[in-house]
Amino acid sequence: MSSRSNLKLKDYLSDDGKLDLSILNLKSVPNINDILALRKVKSIDLSNNQIESLPACIHTLDLSRNHLTTLPDNFGQLKSLKQLDLYNNRIVDLPISFCELAKLEYLDLKDNPLDASLQIQAGKCLNKKECRTCAQKVIQYFEIRKEEFEKEQATKLKKKQANDKAKAKKREKQVEKEREEKRLKRIENAQKRALERDEREKETNKNEKNNENFENKKSNKNQNEQEEEEEGFISQAIDGILNGLLLSLMTFFTWHLYHSRHQPLNFYDFYKHV
Image (cartoon, rainbow, N blue to C red; front, top):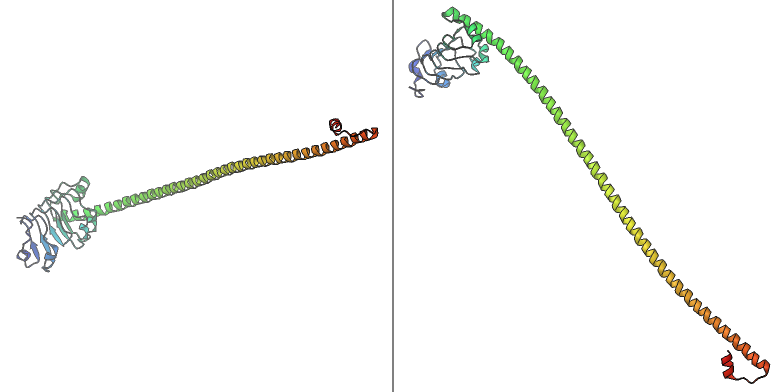
C-alpha cells in the first residue's frame, strides 16, 4: 500500500478525536487540509508506516517505526505539539527550530542513530518520566545550539559584511585608479596632439618662410635684373650721348681747323680726319 490518496480519513477517526493511521504502509502524511477538515482530530497516530518526510503540523504525533532520517527545518512551527514519538527511526539530528516546541512534554528518541551530543541529552527514554526529561533537555539543548548558531551566523554575517565592504573599497580604489589612469592618458594624448600640432605649425611656418625667402630672392633677382637692364640702357644712352657729343666736338674742332687754315673743305678728308 502506498500513500493512499483515496484514503477515507473519517473511517480511522475515533470518537475521542484520535486519528489512527498506523500500520497502513503510508509513505507520506495525508493532506493536512483533509485532516483539519475532520475538525475533531486531537491526535494522529502514524506509527508503523514507511513515511520519509513530514508536513509541518499537529498536537500529538506518533511517528515511531518509520524510515525518517530528518525532520523539516520548520518543524518548530508545531507550537501546540505536546507529545512526539520518534521511536525506531533513522534520525541522527533534529532541526534547530526544535527549540521552539515550548509545549512539548513527551519525546521518545530511542532506537535512533543519534549524534553523540544529542544522545546524551535524550537519554534512554525507557519510560514516560525519561521521555518527559528527554523533551525538556532536548529543547534546552537546542536553545543553546540556536544561540550558538545565531552567534555563528552573526559572526559570518559580520565577516561577510566586512569582506563585502573591503571588496567594495577595493573595487572603488580600482575604479578610482582606472579613472585616474584614463585621466592621465587623456592628458598624455592631449599633450602629444599639442606637440604634433606645434611640430606641424613649425613645419608649416618653415615652409612658408622658405617660400617667402624664395619669393624674395626671386623678386630681388628680377629686380636686380631689371635694374641691370635699366642701368645697361642708361649706360648705353649715356655712351650714345657722349659719343654724339664727342663726335660733334671733333666735327666742330676739325671744321674749325680747316677754317683757320683757309683751306677748301674736302669732305672726304674731313670725314677721314674725323
